[in-house]
Length: 325
Image (cartoon, rainbow, N blue to C red; front, side, top):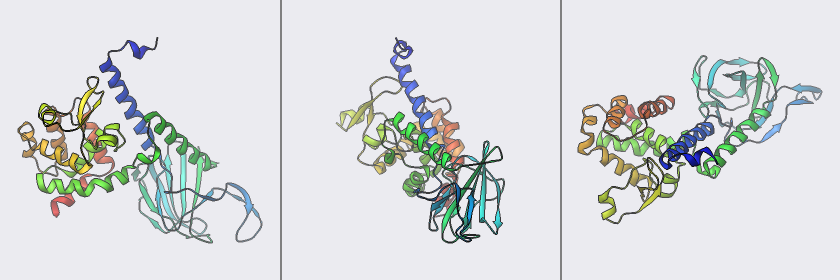
């Protein structure tokens, strides 16, 4: 008999939550270097486009016409610059790998800067020894040349495994950039109306819904894990059943993400969360601490998890922007 069958259902639910967090982290830990991948020239010996003679092509060329270029993994920018062959380039150190993005038209990061997978590093182009706009990608493993194609397959396999483990279709998992872009304006509007930091709204949404991928968010537009209270049920409002602290608990279903966000804002305006409102809408740490202290979440690292999202994706910028509007 499997061990999980011997555990109380509530613990099984918690274990599922831990597994979901794990696979969501795995999915977000890798990124393709471009939105779409089309290899135009492979790694290995080929005829040089300038001389026509056989020459080792030390990377792969990807079709890209002045498009955003993304960090494939978390890491640190080890070098940026220009040389006659590579043109404008960025080199990312990620564990034992170094990955270079070449022929760029724009560089948006600086040396020693810490970056995260999916973060925009710059814009592709045709600088240096290049016949047309494209992205030339090279990689090294422990200093030795390595075919970048294997990194692309690693990204693909990691994302596929995560999607299968989460029981989702790949298209239903938004990247953090797309998720933030979709909801940041709404969060800033809520900050202006209620004084709740935009960063807190976005971080809670991202953490509670797994960046919008949870079944509750997908089916019921509930991005905050809000449970259906007696008042909700008495009004005959829609709900769905999901395992959480207890099996088959009732959670609110909303007609849209906007309705979910508005309900969340009004919840934080209730008497239970009045201590939060003594802090400025740019003080995300104390807002999160007060929300947790008021009993909003049972996760012991709730504040740390949300703050990590805020700092990683610089969501505090939206607090500042909304405060200036």
